[in-house]
Length: 275
Ligand code: CO
Image (cartoon, rainbow, N blue to C red; front, side, top):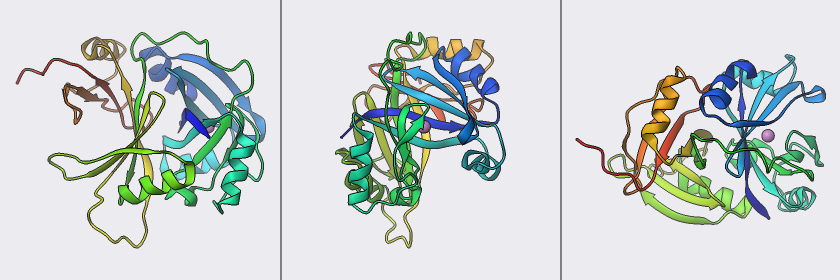
């Protein structure tokens, strides 16, 4: 079974440039940084709570990551779920007829890994990983943000995408709601500390084709004001805090500088913002 979200993969032009935000501004610790020759990428993993952010910089032009960068630019590339047994996970997926990229697990940055075909999950690229012994558990925590609060998967039919992820990956959908104001249909799953938010219109059916994509990362912080001060001191730009959908929570979004990742911060149990 899938225990948690191991990492989100982000394709970048330059890992060195991206580290200015993810390492230097956010204070995330690098747990691995190496070139994987056969995949033609430099991969950098940064620890955030019990998960990681994986930066992927192509080192040559003939790889999937290089083609993604050329066609879509920098941004969220895949989501990786951790399992104790990646072989069993892949066998289970194959037995259920889920289209695969990898026919068997192979060594990757996160341990033994494999990818499902994106068409299996409405266009979202999903990786499974079983970390090798002596993984990345003991890296120091960031003082800016404690963990990934949620990862957004947007879809033109979020109910259908949530159901597909539930069916394909055995993820339990815990809650559904309509976002006040916009009428967007939201569904939520949670793996350990990280919420998966399926966001979309969800009302205008039927669609000829349901399409989904990874569309945001939100970090949980204890003190949003302090986080914003640190972000701004590091030369990055973020909006002003405003109330989030969750009662008592404040949210702010980054204004660029995050390598194509819609990026924000949330503080729960916050005092109301003065009008
Ligand atoms: Co990955």
